[in-house]
Image (tube, rainbow, N blue to C red):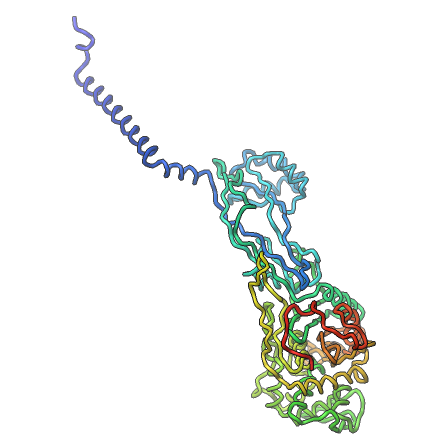
Length: 589
């Protein structure tokens, strides 16, 4: 009788042996592999596990604040709460949408649409009240996150909006100082690690965000004075509304340094609400949009005539009874006059008188003085989008160009160019570079950026500036700018009324004008230069620079001067330390 072993076929025995050998070999290889991974590749394995369950993100440090010249905040950061979802981590999208809808004041269908996006993380809603944020956190829904992060906030709303500008959702500067000084305001980037679940959703942070040592953005201090800015905006709104104008501008500059003390445009906007506005609402037209200056440009003609010795203040000019033939057309004055002095011609804004002065000066010298005063070139102000205005090359001038430009036509200037040009007269003959930032400092108060206060060039001598200042004082005392007169202060200035081009006819309109006044105060020691521009006043009685711009120049100056510590009468006249954060080598003429 055979045994069971004898009944097994030899082939089966061989197969069984092969299988056993294979199993032994397989387990041996697996054991070796495990030994290799755990002993020799333990660090690599741990790194791979870490890579699968952790996610790194680049996080921007806090943005630097923007303050006025006295460190009062104009732009700062506040924490904003947002709700995000990781669509792949949602276990029940429909139920999640139903749970979140009443808390977020959103429709279920709207949420379901967001949940269908293919991105790893989707923002559902921002600006969530803290009470509702905590309510969502208490739900502990997988794939739903409540994240708190910084966002730009403008506590003064419309105040200085066109200067400050705004930053977008990514905390990146988009307009104004926020954009122009982006490299200083933007902090350094941090690498932050998060724990994530098997589906890739973020669970929690692995880093302490508050302990980061990376640099936050620098503080940018403006030359703007919050109080002066408020006064300028307040009076400008009154002027525009009173005259029924389309818009208005008031720029105030320290003529000795070029520092801008106020930059008011109306209508204005709230930078906190920029997402609901369009580009035309926040456009900074004081640097971007040139206009024909009208008679305010006569200050350049007068300065050139005095500097070249063509005219003296008492030189007589024949007024032609208020009319003059120029290139086949008749130029009129508002008042008939026979013989008038050069001072009277400027004070009464005589077109005939100034044209005769310009003809004596000649085209080449007129062009040279316009360039010397900064027209036809950018001022270099630290704001983006600046226009150079329009000053045609001399070889393109027509037979009438010289006389037209003498009256402020056939040339276009920006408001910042005009106020900078008047500052040449106020500060003794120097062309300064206007600026709106006084300093950039780090967290320890160390200066990061130095503002250059050196003059660009000297268009006229101190003697000419002094003599012209006295002539411009007569404009306010007895000329076209009497409504800019102030009790106890000596004011110098020039009115301007320029006709706008009618787009339909291509000719000057008789009803659409730009009314302006540019001047400085006090004459004996100027501390501020101011330009007031009222665009297209609808009320007929206000369609003259002397009727609307001059009185509001006076209103602003009357409120600003005491704030600067400059009292009426001259006996206690002083430049306060608060006026200019930088010293200047210039002295008033």
